[in-house]
Image 1 (spheres, rainbow, N blue to C red):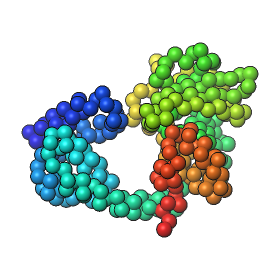
Image 2: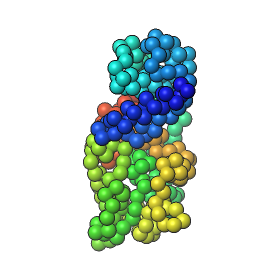
Image 3: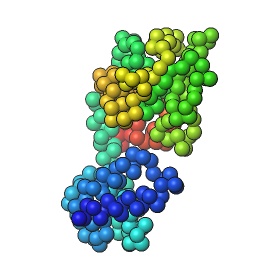
Image 4: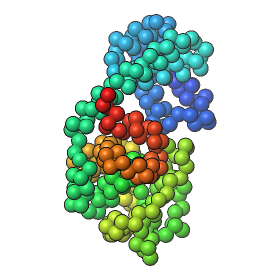
Length: 283
């Protein structure tokens, strides 16, 4: 009964804000799942909620996620949130500490940038294409759901990401419409003139880079993410690979390249240097 009431509260809130587009689809799914899992009411007193949350979740990031949702739902229902907000604000230093510790631990386990480049040179086809785009342009998984076309005239879907073969120039134009921060940054586009990259894309021929047996693109996020992870070097995944790349750019003081990665990824420089910078783990 409690879970059902929580789900109703979340559903009504999400329905209320659906036209405002302030929450991503991923966040909406997360909030819906949280509501289904909570075995106590969102409308309990703040002190009781805080005690229950602290008993259940020691990770400050998880605690913050739950608090974010509870605060939004309670505000929508004119319930007090001052103590919940105070707790959430107090988590910032703890979250920063955990993030630094995790980055330091991760730095000891990750390979070098040179290793990534060596491994890239031993790949081909789809595996070469996605690893190249992660290493050189810091693309996320969603960005990599690309369709190869012969000309810009074939770009007939505003929600599709494309690789356009520029055969006269021997270059590939990347146009990304569907990605995590599209509402903030708009359509992303850049041109890749690397000859090996061009040859690998042309060899794939027209069609979706990742596709089902029917020839249609993979739409299920979980299936697509698993495919990308499987093809990344040593199954590192794009997140860890981008951290290695950024560390190398900082080592070599290649700040222009860092700015280009920020633009290509659609992530602010501040976020890159905070969340993807392995040096941020050092005091």
